[in-house]
Image (cartoon, rainbow, N blue to C red; front, side, top):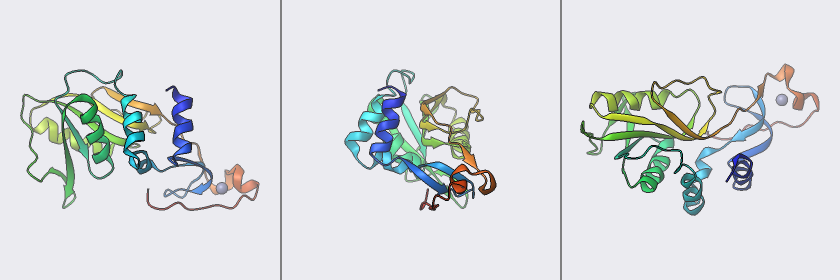
Amino acid sequence: MNKNELLDLFKEIGVLKTGHFRLTSGLHSEYYLQCATIFENPRIAEKIIAQLQPILPPDVTTVVAPAIGGITMGYEVARLLGARSIFAERQDGVMTLRRGFSLSPDEKVLVAEDVVTTGGSVKEVLEIVRFHGCEIVGVTSVVDRSNGKVDFGVPFYPLIKMEVQTFTQEECPLCAQNIPITKPGSR
Ligand code: ZN
Protein backbone atom coordinates (compact mmCIF):
# COMPACT_ATOMS: atom_id res chain seq x y z
CA MET A 1 0.00 0.00 0.00
CA ASN A 2 1.60 3.28 -1.05
CA LYS A 3 0.79 6.67 0.51
CA ASN A 4 -2.03 7.45 -1.95
CA GLU A 5 -3.64 4.04 -1.48
CA LEU A 6 -3.47 4.52 2.28
CA LEU A 7 -5.04 8.00 1.99
CA ASP A 8 -7.79 6.57 -0.25
CA LEU A 9 -8.46 3.89 2.38
CA PHE A 10 -8.54 6.60 5.10
CA LYS A 11 -11.18 8.49 3.06
CA GLU A 12 -13.17 5.32 2.39
CA ILE A 13 -13.42 4.33 6.07
CA GLY A 14 -13.99 7.89 7.34
CA VAL A 15 -10.60 8.54 8.95
CA LEU A 16 -9.98 11.46 6.63
CA LYS A 17 -12.99 13.65 5.94
CA THR A 18 -13.05 16.43 3.37
CA GLY A 19 -15.26 19.48 3.62
CA HIS A 20 -15.00 22.74 5.57
CA PHE A 21 -14.24 22.27 9.23
CA ARG A 22 -13.69 24.45 12.27
CA LEU A 23 -11.06 22.58 14.29
CA THR A 24 -10.68 22.57 18.08
CA SER A 25 -7.97 25.21 17.63
CA GLY A 26 -10.56 27.49 16.00
CA LEU A 27 -8.70 27.31 12.69
CA HIS A 28 -10.43 26.25 9.48
CA SER A 29 -9.41 23.30 7.32
CA GLU A 30 -10.53 21.38 4.27
CA TYR A 31 -9.63 18.13 6.06
CA TYR A 32 -10.55 16.52 9.33
CA LEU A 33 -8.79 13.50 10.78
CA GLN A 34 -10.87 11.14 12.96
CA CYS A 35 -8.18 8.67 13.95
CA ALA A 36 -10.18 6.45 16.30
CA THR A 37 -11.94 5.27 13.11
CA ILE A 38 -8.76 3.47 12.03
CA PHE A 39 -9.42 0.85 14.71
CA GLU A 40 -13.21 0.66 14.31
CA ASN A 41 -12.95 -2.36 12.03
CA PRO A 42 -10.28 -4.73 13.41
CA ARG A 43 -9.69 -6.43 10.05
CA ILE A 44 -8.97 -3.09 8.37
CA ALA A 45 -6.87 -1.93 11.34
CA GLU A 46 -4.82 -5.12 11.13
CA LYS A 47 -4.21 -4.46 7.42
CA ILE A 48 -3.11 -0.87 8.11
CA ILE A 49 -0.84 -1.79 11.04
CA ALA A 50 0.72 -4.61 8.98
CA GLN A 51 2.18 -1.86 6.75
CA LEU A 52 4.48 -0.99 9.66
CA GLN A 53 6.19 -4.40 9.58
CA PRO A 54 9.08 -3.43 7.24
CA ILE A 55 9.59 -0.09 9.02
CA LEU A 56 9.76 -1.17 12.66
CA PRO A 57 12.94 -2.37 14.39
CA PRO A 58 13.26 -6.08 15.27
CA ASP A 59 13.48 -7.52 18.80
CA VAL A 60 10.80 -5.37 20.42
CA THR A 61 9.69 -7.14 23.58
CA THR A 62 7.14 -4.62 24.83
CA VAL A 63 4.86 -1.98 23.33
CA VAL A 64 3.79 0.82 25.66
CA ALA A 65 1.02 3.22 24.65
CA PRO A 66 -0.53 6.35 26.18
CA ALA A 67 -4.26 5.98 26.95
CA ILE A 68 -6.77 6.42 25.43
CA GLY A 69 -5.94 6.96 21.78
CA GLY A 70 -2.85 4.76 21.81
CA ILE A 71 -4.35 1.66 23.45
CA THR A 72 -5.75 -0.08 20.37
CA MET A 73 -2.75 1.07 18.32
CA GLY A 74 -0.32 -0.40 20.88
CA TYR A 75 -2.29 -3.63 21.02
CA GLU A 76 -2.27 -4.08 17.23
CA VAL A 77 1.44 -3.24 16.99
CA ALA A 78 2.20 -5.73 19.78
CA ARG A 79 0.21 -8.39 17.93
CA LEU A 80 2.16 -7.65 14.74
CA LEU A 81 5.53 -7.90 16.52
CA GLY A 82 4.65 -10.73 18.90
CA ALA A 83 5.40 -8.40 21.80
CA ARG A 84 3.75 -7.61 25.13
CA SER A 85 1.22 -4.76 25.17
CA ILE A 86 0.70 -2.38 28.08
CA PHE A 87 -0.53 1.19 28.43
CA ALA A 88 0.00 4.17 30.68
CA GLU A 89 -2.75 6.51 31.79
CA ARG A 90 -3.09 9.76 33.69
CA GLN A 91 -3.78 9.62 37.40
CA ASP A 92 -4.24 13.09 38.92
CA GLY A 93 -2.71 14.47 35.75
CA VAL A 94 0.44 12.31 35.91
CA MET A 95 1.09 9.56 33.34
CA THR A 96 1.39 6.29 35.30
CA LEU A 97 1.42 2.51 34.86
CA ARG A 98 -1.59 1.08 36.66
CA ARG A 99 -3.63 -2.15 36.51
CA GLY A 100 -0.66 -4.29 37.53
CA PHE A 101 1.37 -3.27 34.47
CA SER A 102 5.11 -3.19 35.06
CA LEU A 103 8.40 -2.87 33.16
CA SER A 104 11.81 -4.41 33.84
CA PRO A 105 15.24 -3.15 32.70
CA ASP A 106 15.84 -6.06 30.27
CA GLU A 107 12.87 -5.05 28.07
CA LYS A 108 13.18 -3.46 24.63
CA VAL A 109 10.36 -0.98 24.39
CA LEU A 110 8.56 0.59 21.47
CA VAL A 111 6.14 3.40 22.33
CA ALA A 112 3.00 3.47 20.15
CA GLU A 113 0.46 6.26 19.61
CA ASP A 114 -2.29 6.57 16.98
CA VAL A 115 -1.54 10.16 15.96
CA VAL A 116 1.41 12.33 16.92
CA THR A 117 0.68 16.07 16.84
CA THR A 118 2.70 17.69 19.63
CA GLY A 119 3.95 14.35 20.97
CA GLY A 120 3.20 15.36 24.57
CA SER A 121 1.66 12.07 25.74
CA VAL A 122 4.40 10.04 24.02
CA LYS A 123 7.09 12.07 25.81
CA GLU A 124 5.43 11.35 29.16
CA VAL A 125 5.38 7.61 28.36
CA LEU A 126 9.06 7.75 27.34
CA GLU A 127 9.81 9.22 30.80
CA ILE A 128 8.15 6.23 32.47
CA VAL A 129 10.06 3.77 30.29
CA ARG A 130 13.37 5.55 31.03
CA PHE A 131 12.55 5.54 34.74
CA HIS A 132 12.30 1.73 34.61
CA GLY A 133 15.69 1.50 32.88
CA CYS A 134 14.40 -0.21 29.72
CA GLU A 135 16.02 0.09 26.32
CA ILE A 136 13.88 2.38 24.14
CA VAL A 137 13.99 1.24 20.51
CA GLY A 138 11.73 4.01 19.24
CA VAL A 139 8.30 5.50 18.79
CA THR A 140 5.69 4.55 16.20
CA SER A 141 2.38 6.06 15.11
CA VAL A 142 -0.07 5.60 12.25
CA VAL A 143 -0.03 9.32 11.50
CA ASP A 144 2.63 11.95 12.07
CA ARG A 145 1.01 15.35 11.77
CA SER A 146 3.73 17.22 13.65
CA ASN A 147 5.03 18.75 10.40
CA GLY A 148 8.49 17.48 11.36
CA LYS A 149 8.49 19.56 14.56
CA VAL A 150 8.56 16.72 17.08
CA ASP A 151 11.83 15.27 18.41
CA PHE A 152 11.61 12.34 20.83
CA GLY A 153 15.38 11.85 21.09
CA VAL A 154 14.84 8.26 19.83
CA PRO A 155 13.98 6.96 16.33
CA PHE A 156 10.43 7.79 15.19
CA TYR A 157 8.65 5.39 12.81
CA PRO A 158 5.36 6.88 11.59
CA LEU A 159 3.41 5.02 8.90
CA ILE A 160 2.37 8.22 7.17
CA LYS A 161 3.20 11.92 7.48
CA MET A 162 0.24 14.21 6.93
CA GLU A 163 0.45 17.95 6.85
CA VAL A 164 -3.05 19.28 7.24
CA GLN A 165 -3.22 22.87 6.03
CA THR A 166 -5.16 25.22 8.31
CA PHE A 167 -6.39 28.78 7.87
CA THR A 168 -7.72 31.59 10.02
CA GLN A 169 -11.27 32.58 9.16
CA GLU A 170 -10.01 35.71 7.39
CA GLU A 171 -7.67 33.81 5.07
CA CYS A 172 -9.84 30.69 4.58
CA PRO A 173 -10.48 30.02 0.86
CA LEU A 174 -13.56 27.91 1.75
CA CYS A 175 -15.12 30.80 3.69
CA ALA A 176 -14.38 32.99 0.66
CA GLN A 177 -16.52 30.58 -1.39
CA ASN A 178 -19.33 30.73 1.22
CA ILE A 179 -19.12 26.98 1.83
CA PRO A 180 -21.00 26.10 5.07
CA ILE A 181 -18.67 25.19 7.95
CA THR A 182 -19.08 22.23 10.33
CA LYS A 183 -17.54 21.62 13.73
CA PRO A 184 -16.63 17.95 14.12
CA GLY A 185 -17.18 16.16 17.43
CA SER A 186 -14.60 14.95 19.92
CA ARG A 187 -11.19 14.43 18.40
ZN1 ZN B 1 -13.38 28.69 6.57
